[in-house]
Image (cartoon, rainbow, N blue to C red):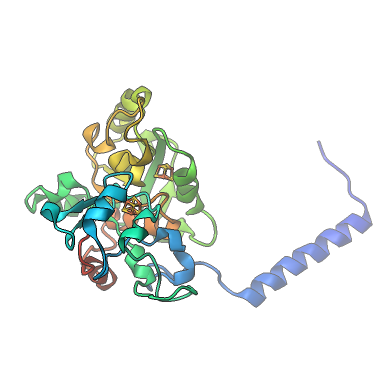
Length: 292
Ligand code: SF4
Ligand code: SF4
């Protein structure tokens, strides 16, 4: 059906288009510069910064406070331990035990010590990390196949919906995923990688396995958020089946609850082989004591 519009509406529409064009010209290009440059503080919300141990951190107290078992004190010592970010839901409860969540920029709080790059915590999965160096060889072969384009299929196996929204945000003009050769697809037959969000629900185990099997080789699996990595807040619920890595082989993990789009983008680029985990911004992250 065609809708006829009068001269007045036509003029108004033309004026509106001019306003948007002028606004675009005035503001310039809005797309993020990441990964060419490190993310800015504005791109990483405070809640995306990982817990950072300080000299006054009491690891034993942290272990007792943490609701997801992410903090493990070293053999009952109070001053050493490990934080598994794959289990962390970034609730900041461990601040009481002396962990620091503050950024070095943009915050009005005192005792600032972390910068935005500290939020980039993508990592190879335990399966890949324990593959005795073989994993890089496996990855390198896959990276050749994904050099020019990388099609991702998003699957939700029991999320609260926040991780889905953050993944889908990547297709907006600010993140402009396509500029990096990454595209969403709805078909497993066209996918190179499965991006999994949510805590694996018992009813979704078979669906997940079948979807994985339908993706042609070579393929990758990327777990996004604490839920698929460890179960996150849902790990003790009756319907929770297991971490996704126990159902299908996961390659890359992006901690967070939810991770911000830049953090997810980092995980995708690591999976594609466009970003190496020994990049300088990440070396800085890895030097933070106590992160597993
Ligand atoms: S922020 Fe993470 S490590 Fe700290 S208490 Fe919450 S879940 Fe545990
Ligand atoms: S990781 Fe957090 S934000 Fe993501 S689905 Fe689980 S509960 Fe929701």
